[in-house]
Image (cartoon, rainbow, N blue to C red; front, side, top):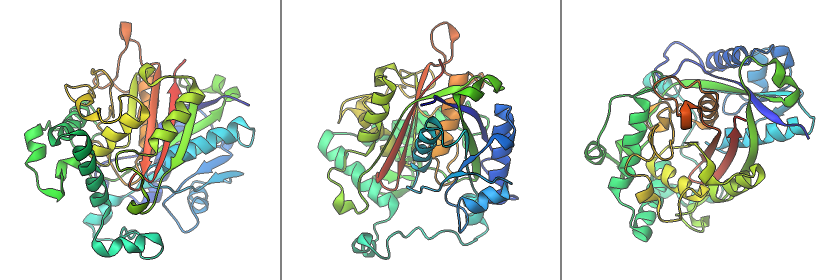
Length: 386
């Protein structure tokens, strides 16, 4: 069983990209990730992609000029990329592939602006979800309902949830690639237009364009890399429910399972993690994922996220690029979590947003945890520099 490392990471152009197709963003990110690794694309024999094309990932691989012998097109919402990375790491470790490229790109913002037709987000005209759809139970309302349950059960407050958005924006202020960088206050979050009670606009992720890519390689290729490797120490995946009526507890996400498995395989405790990249389509997603990963006890997420704990120089830096709440959210954001975690561990996040440990050293350990659907799926990776 070979060790597996992240060899290269890159973003495509992000934010407001009106003059590119999703395919072009895939290609741009892929080229940049290979250049970041210092490896030729001929080494790539594995490819993972989802969300684009009738035969994803076949169409995207063809567009990139690749003929992979290992592919993955798993699609479980926002957790897709952590789940794919777990699959890819297992394949490389077992000798089924030597280098797997994960790529994503979307023009979600530009499509909306141009009124181009995009994927139907109604979810569930058929199947189990048909019993919820007639009641207008949209994705945001599912998260809002879960947040209300946490507030009722544990006393979590709107001010505490708003703190997550405020700190995400503060982190984004140090990221030149972030779409929104102007500081915000708790009062501004609370006074915004209501999207789905209790969420106001700033409790919800932004809509942007953009893409990114991550290259995973077997350990024997690490000596050829242009940048220090970031090792995949442990992975975990889990699914929970599709219909809200099938969810046992609105205050527990499948990260409780994926996180436990990832930390166990890595031989690492949550208290040892230096930086966390958490999927944050909504503020409540950040809070409950932190609880379920074990950074605080269940029900203590509200107090945990206050007093600047999530800032770059806080007790647990979270979403150091600004996250989906402020930096970018072109759709399935999970792959961006791996990019930012790798940059932080390599000490390449930039002078203003780089997390530093004792004596100015980069972080040693990071966790990236993606959530899909309405807490339907989860993928968690523990990554290390040493």
